[in-house]
Length: 257
Image (tube, rainbow, N blue to C red):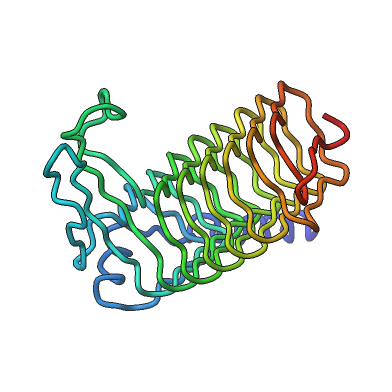
């Protein structure tokens, strides 16, 4: 009887802990950024879309004249830290106002966000799209052990300091096309379940893909890897394209693909 009572007690404590997890409205986070307060959450569930493209410091950087696309830029100028969090909505550092035919329409207004301070997102769940197209990360960017259930859009993003995606799982389209990594970067033990697009990606320093797993289509066409890049024990089980790919100036295609 005592054993059962002890089991029941710890079960109730565990249940209470789960029920007591912090629920945070995304608007609260936006308000903190606008007040220039550091953002740090752990074991939290973020509800609603976290839209970083419409901050108080947003400004127009292209006016749309002569067929140019109107472009509005916000800057996240405080450190961001999310650990063991779940994002129930979208995580938006890029969005457009006209989704239909957005590639060719000149009236497709673009909104995106840059990050002037460190970004740390560890062991988090992205249940909606995570969009960072065109974003610039001035300080260290840590995206380790995360799960991206939908689109992970980093196309044209620039990482000016170290970037780490080690241990992250990409269940949807992982788009790093034209992305620029100025310092060392890592995708060690990362898992790509669908399309992994690194076409034209620019790595100025070494990148680590050790033990990464690529299950869907993988595109590294035209990518130039610097000396020190690692693909040890990387696994490729889908279609791969390493046409015109080089490592330290030499034609390159990893083993195990």
